[in-house]
Length: 280
Ligand code: AMP
Image 1: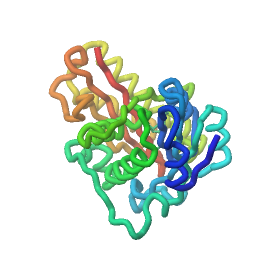
Image 2: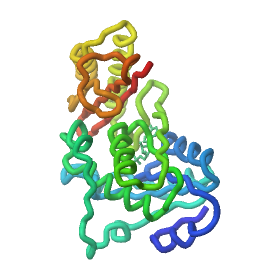
Image 3: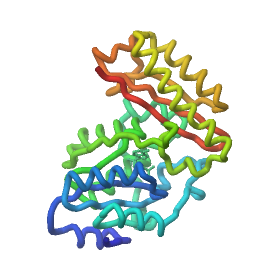
């Protein structure tokens, strides 16, 4: 496995040979990330992973400086997953101070939900992902459904800018109790870890209601909010939206149009998100 720290090295290593499937990450890798690497390996002969904690997607009061960076463990996981090349740039390699910021915006998707609680977040995500896709030039890039709105934003960016890459959505990996795996789960205290299952419980309740024929988004949203609050979370949002546009729906009828339940909530300083798509 090669480790490249500069754009020039990546370009040199990838200029010839078979196609590449790419998995962008911020490190602190877990089995969810590994499942993306495995999917990438099924799709193309060469797998490239980037590990870059992107400062431009963190707000001023967020956890950029304390975001976990267990580099040796991450490289070991990549090696074990059969990754061919890890791109491990410094911040100045990706965002040199001489460079003027380039912003990509998709106002219909980047002004709602996560964006309301994390202003500027998707601007930072688009900026780094556009750069990484141009540096690595993969045929396929794998993204987790765990970050549902991010996946929608990336798809829209790739489509809207005619970027020549296929975006491969990958299912969310969960712990045994249903908590979605996340690099931020390491921040949870043992008590918070027990409470954290509340997000998944809310999703299961939404599933039950939809299966039983509930069509009013407001009732499902209220039930989800109650369950999340009942587990000690401060709720940011618990909503049912159109699975494609992320716009509110008048009625929940997955057999007509897929919907997605999206949740974000905080346990102390730890903010967790989760979601589930319902389609016929
Ligand atoms: P991150 O390192 O958090 O930026 O995540 C890198 C990629 O891994 C993103 O495409 C995430 O959606 C994906 N990912 C994160 N957690 C999971 C999970 N539990 N299951 C599947 N994919 C995930």
